[in-house]
Length: 613
Image (cartoon, rainbow, N blue to C red; front, top):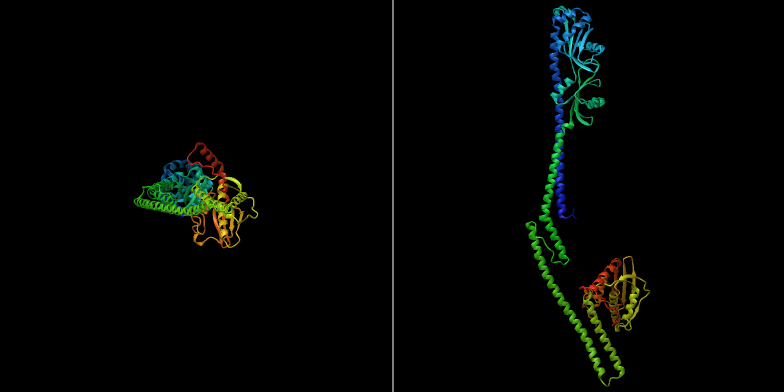
């Protein structure tokens, strides 16, 4: 994050905080609501089982009373006195209607089945006989019994002829109510849960839809694993919280009641809460973005503008616009920076003016000194030449000295002209550098300063590059002339070596002389204009022009080595910069041609060929 901008850091921080708080709130609320839903569902399941027990107890009590009332009816006793199954069967319909029960049974004292009636599909006689015999072991309490998949709760009352003390039992009257879908619906409505009765793995009664109950029937092992502790179960792609309780039924049948509560429907509230939290999170995120934008507008954006102004100031641009918006502290900082910038502008102008005046002073001093030196030589030699007694041989020598003085003045004036034209465009061409060096050496050898100087070029390789031959030749000429002047002043035989080499990145033109070396006092200011310490003649622009020309080509002039007897100056040209200049050459040529045709101000002019004056 240390490389991010302040605005990015601020916005990312606000977004992270908003998302983090929203996610944390969602997680906490989700866990809390889920726990609450589980607790509520568990309580509902316990309440459902309790409701079933209460309803069963009430109906069992009423059933026992109804059975006792039927057992006391004289007409029923009279019917049972016959002990004839057909007679009892024909007369039992009236008593079944009176009872209003789901099951009506009359048996003998030994448990022989005389007749029975039931609501719904006819029951199997053998199952009824076997189930009732199991219930007769405890005739005082209501009994839960299953006749196959059909589940009933029955009450058994003995019939006596006369008082029970006479022990004149006629048989038994048995009435019962069915545990069916109606009863399941009553329990379901009272407990707000789904109820299912299962007999030996087969659903006897349920309030579940058909597809869900079929799925429940196929998961017998899952039902057995539930136990009395509520657990989750998936039925028909819906999650339920379910609890199972085994009911006390007689016989070998296993009777279970399964109470289910839909977790998906109960968690609808959780989904609504989640939607609200997400909406609030998005709203907080939007508010955070608005706040971040407001902060960016009042703080970070003005600071970025101020930073851009500082970078522009570093580049020398004192007119970069500074925003006056933002917070009070930022505006004060901008005003302070603007005041500092104006002070720097004033100081910069003063420094430039001082440097300009100093440069003009150095130039005037150097130029006047050199011109006075050459004019004095011309004047004195001309006066000697005008004397009648001067011989022709002496006049010839004086003429040579006059010509040398004129040459020095010409070099001085040309250097000043080139120094004033250093901003002109390059005229590039792909030239062999070895041929350029050889041409320049021939020109240097014509200069008086190179007399008696040996210039060697051992094995110059053929290297081509995109360069301005006239300008680069002038740079090489200046370095060679300086090397010749230095070699003349050395104690060793005057010698100048010129070499050229290249590698993957650079082209290096090296000029080595046998002179006394560069004075330590001027090494730091060696490439500044009008620095000519240690030289009898020269205005001090040779190295300055050479450095500027090298920089125009994307390179530089370096003092590689300097010691008595060996001083090396190198022009280092970078191939990448030269290739870039070569790619721009057609475009620059088109612009120059247009400028020349239209006469636009600032158009480039073709410089005269570089040659010895």
